[in-house]
Image (cartoon, rainbow, N blue to C red):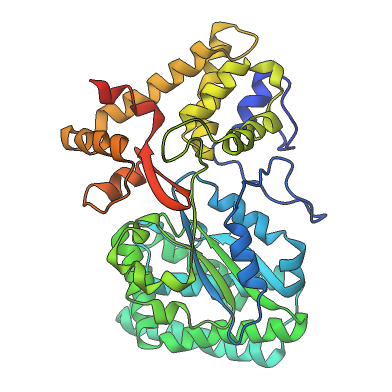
Length: 419
């Protein structure tokens, strides 16, 4: 196994690794930024940081979103390592996919994950909780297991997993993720006493605050992965419940929710991370700041000697200003250049990559999609129509901010619009 060391690549093998699509940019322990981190101009994460550092009567809740691949996970990790945030908050970050089934996600699953993560991570870091709280948690655990047995009608329930609270939190989430029957039983149990589950979260939160002198802050990643119906059910239908825990929380939210009428439920606490502008709304000229940011993204990961300058600019153009798309273009182009036996990535490697991506879209876009794409390409207007949302999620259409928000067609698709 090759070590993840965040060093600039001097050869194609290392470069291939450095453009891993899901490379986690965790901050170092010394509080500095990750060596691969690129701070975009006008970064909305600064707005989120400022809001978290502002005084509050009740611990804040925020709903953080952006298009797939725009860097949400990296920004949350960067926020986690910020010295000012660490001074004010006892902060943790986790992906909901590790604690629940993101295809079948429910608000009760999320609440259990919050409570379980706060408890387990505090204990794993050596934190000691009051004996009275541990007794209360044991009592609550017993009631949960008893209720599940009642719901299970006497059969041996899979939730009878351990005597200790540590193991209960560790295994209950895993069983809810992997075992549908247990998931149903636990949800029915918490339906009868969701206030009890929230009280557990609040008791753990209060204990940590008294010990550490900092409010717990929970940054939950990958909650943008469930479909729109699931997002509505959690953040619109159950919004009041999701804001009840006394810890500060940043939920990632599906961008689809931002293009629905239900967005109004989270409007006041919503922060959106747009793609990086590579051009202007008028289409005249290029956005030099955007190109500079993405050029830095490449050069931090790979020596400039491994790519022709014109190939580098073309890769940025075909990325559409989306970090993950740029990593995808670079990785595929590197693979093509390596198979050619070349010493560096050339324009032909990037063009071959764009053609491959275009072929993927060609398989899934129908005539009506193409009609809408041609309209978007001409007008750049971000106007709600039923077909717009799925095309935004597919990244066939990309949203930008330049004073006002606008959109454009993914650059690799522009050749299709002439057909």
